[in-house]
Length: 382
Image 1 (tube, rainbow, N blue to C red):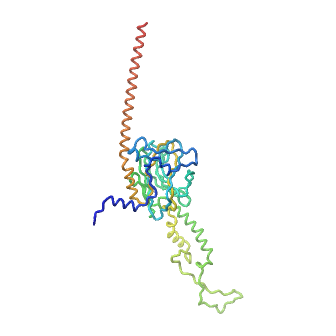
Image 2 (image 1 turned 90 degrees about the vertical axis):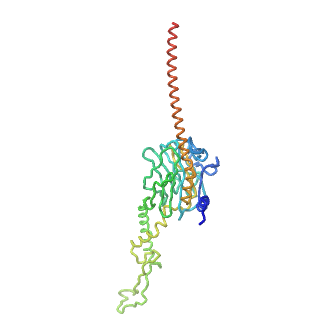
Image 3 (image 1 turned 30 degrees about the vertical axis):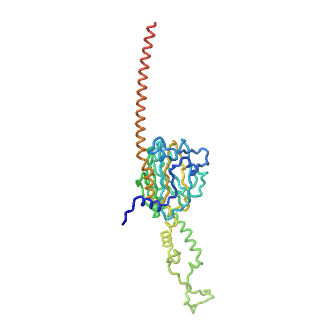
């Protein structure tokens, strides 16, 4: 077997992967042509492109940074609409709370294609909300909220987010087999099955109740239709002692249709058995929490008490390996240098503070000596 070079394998992975959206902010101020600031509220905070006070690479680490304290923010970017039905969906990005967040959001939202970007606000419908949220000592969590049947449903597990001031890589994976995974800095921190971790049991009960009130009642009301009719027994004949005046017109006996086969129709089937079969065969395929038909935009719609958060390296794809490699090529390359620069700055700040303290101490001593000299000089003059 011929040896396949690594670069060829990587290129094949790129070809196989579908990248719906990718943003690294490497073209200066042109990001403003792709991202739309909401004008729904004149008090919304503004973003700027910045790599922050410390970084691993001045250009590569530039991202959208919040700039005003105590503000709501709303901004979004549109892309070609797509459906993730039957496909894996990966949502990934980096977030850096350089100000060491005390209260505010660091999450992203995935919107349907018809979202009104100019009027984006807290009431705008979204499909997915994912990412860190911090407020005080109580809230330090990663949100994973999915839209289902006109309601928002949160993952019932407690997923802790990072709370320091460094850049971190967040990734959400939703798979067509109803499994999911949440990763931080390339490490899996939570995973499971959507059916169980989003309280789907209560949703099933709601759906079953709807089926009982709608489907079975419809079946009862349609007994005159073909699917509920019984067959006449053609071989039967009127009994010789039948009295039509007393008993009315004779009607031949009815033969019941055989039980259902593939149609899931309540033809001679016990009601509970029929409903159970219907729910078992159609529920998860018809109402799948991980599938969205018209994904078309990504945005930041959040509140921050203290500004300074930087969002970067956005990616939406159907390929987990591509997302992993993209994370290594971006955050993976700059995470080390970022911490090194922060450490150097911290040492410089300590050194500067020490020098300032020493200077103040010397000035105090010099000032005291000068005052003593002045007092003695005045005595000599007297």
